View 1: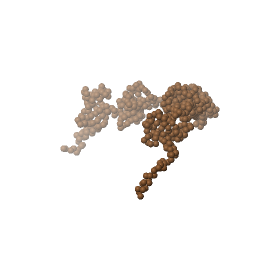
View 2: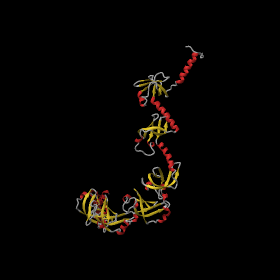
View 3: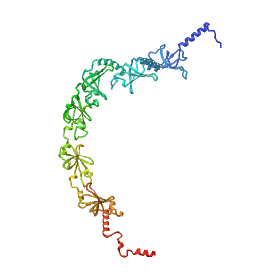
View 4: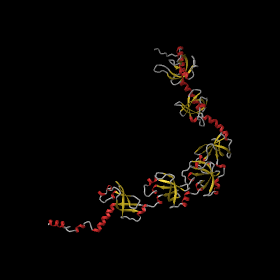
Length: 573
């Protein structure tokens, strides 16, 4: 091979010039956007000429149709494409027009994001969590979160679909190629200018008429002023009385007058007060006396009671526990409505906590105290069964709105209390004895059997170890059911108390109807407790016999009783 060392001749200079110009024009690299010239168009493909490539890149005609470029393409026109591969395994050049468009569009988005400029786009579809926005200039798709669609909740966005409008770029991920936009920021920027002009109208001390309650929060209440401004009334500025939540005082949609107490032109906020429209009622709280009845106005009803006004600005809570003497857990909604004027007694005034407590039930006489005065313990009264459960009856006495408690154990002396309870129904009239009155606990206990003679009195003149005659009613594995003569009560003689000899302690020995004697083994009149025993009777009789006829070995005194022992001694000798 011949090497040219002399580059000064005309042929060498011409070759050098040609080589340098060719390399400078075509810097071909994968992953870059290049310009291609349309060389040929068929039904399915578009062939391009790119200077520096050894073969013609080919584009699918459908890709150009999806981009809306198929109608404008003709031989000789230029198309920007992304060079994905200079040569694949088949030796072909791989290019993409759509990807080139996306990259160019992304560059424009990056430029707009860095300059904080709005872009034009349109909402093309909905997706989970928001919408998809198409960039009008490049066709790039971006995400619009649901919270960024508008500055207020929208149930329907059909009027916004496919409408060209401005969006602000709020987030750009260059690595993943994702963009997030906001329509809300565009709207707010316009409103911010308008809001600044509106706020300039207000000064501290101004009175705003008929502001509408718009919403609550844990720290205050929001009011809408003339449909142009939302203002906040802080929780502490709602009332001179203690307020836990704005819904205790206000209802959505109500209208109230407000006083402007602060204006922040930087944050574009106006603070207002309701309580400062009226003088502080606690300055003359000494005018109110404890345990005295006052007229109050119901201003709001809650599940736990009602808020009432002693005077404008002085609100107090009437708790549900202070509504009635007799009805527990009663709802204020069933007794009052907003605007009612009712009588209440002031039960507490706390200046430090700025709290006044009231009671409605104290304006009426305590029915339990009335009952105690009229029917002291020991009185026999007539009651009507008004309610019943599995172990007791509840009686209404006269016209008093209180129920007396009658336990099944206080129904009868003779039968099982739960069985006796089944005999009674609502509406039955019963004469009962007042057993206990607890006014502080609002409880009254009565008994039916206490109005009858106690058959247990039969044992009043009896004592332990006394022998009585009983009749056997029945027997089972546990023992004998017996009834003493001339007594109306039944008792049990346990199996181990039937006989001294365990072989004889069989309940089956008795068929029922027999009259036998037994002894009282235990007796407690106060606790109404008694125990009977045949075994004890046998022990008492045996003891008596021993005491009367001598010791157990008394048979030794009989003739010849010592004969056997003498014979034993003789045999040993």
